[in-house]
Length: 117
Image (cartoon, rainbow, N blue to C red; front, side):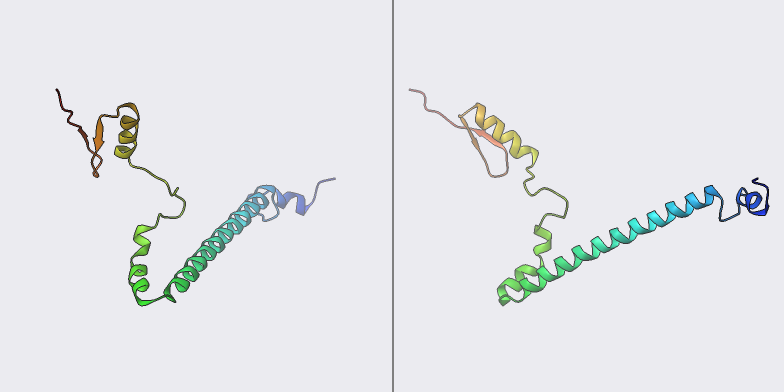
């Protein structure tokens, strides 16, 4: 019972039928499947982007000029669209608290001058 060539060899580290080697094979196959799935998702996203640019390129000549650099002005994938800088957030907080402050376009703050009688 349990004494034989297959039982003996399946316990060796180099035998493909050993439990540890079967486990390694299964993990490697799962890793390969995950990698293939990830590559397919990336390719699908690439195709969508190319289709979008193709549709945009069918527009007029002025739009083509804008399209050539439009990727620089679009947010990268995976980021939220409404990201505000710290200076703008600080400016909004200060403006809510004090109405005597006039904001400049750069985000710096200037006090309003009030007339004294």
